[in-house]
Image (cartoon, rainbow, N blue to C red):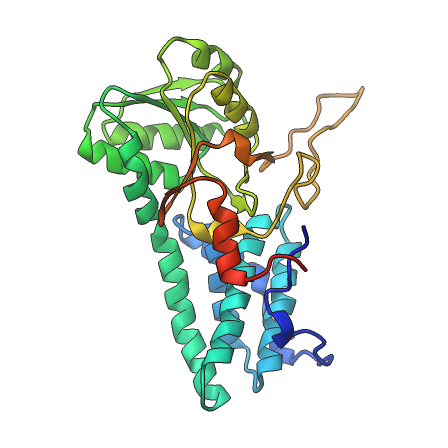
Length: 333
């Protein structure tokens, strides 16, 4: 299913324009990376949005067309700089749509419209970042007295859910954390954070997930985060999520995804080969150990997901398509 251009008819068939010197010299990639490194709470889509807001402040433009061209060019440059562009696409598409909608609705001089955009663009990013609190409020209610949650990765949304639950049910639920052998420091940090909340945590290796899920009444639910939520309600997340979801379904264990709506993206993967980008997973060699690439992801289809937990409440995976349709209109191009 093809997706329409977020700028729609307003930016289609625009005349080719020469980029200004300030636009060429602006380093959108460095801006994005600096934002991520300076604020551990920023998600990739929000960091992309804030980078574009900074871009518009730094690069002068005198027309609507120049503004849209500048945002499009730097969005493409930013997405081309990362191995997995899908989370950034969620942010850049959303900001471009917001930009076009604002330009259509505002009246008066272009300077006044541009000032309005910059002021409200920051507000837009702040609201998107604050959505994690809404996810926590919607999700903690699944965690009941005496229950055990299995999770993996380092999702800030999942951490928010568990933190909120720990305040309501201190010491009354447990967590099984699946260690990421490729990221021992991250795994240790997550476990320390959870234990610091007073939550009893058991660590297990990835190879033990099936065994632990098979232990009678030891796992009551799975909570994971997502880098992006696709328009059919599936998720792109840390590699290993797909197999955990399959095991959960086989054992009739609820599989919940905690994700903010700004991670919703107009992508429709069909299977593991259709992520929308290439990643090197298999390295066949007869000489030395195989390489292990970091930041690998997989795709979990919607039929394996019990519910999506968002700042707008708890929904079935079909909610994503409805939400994107409401934002962008027709999703057919």
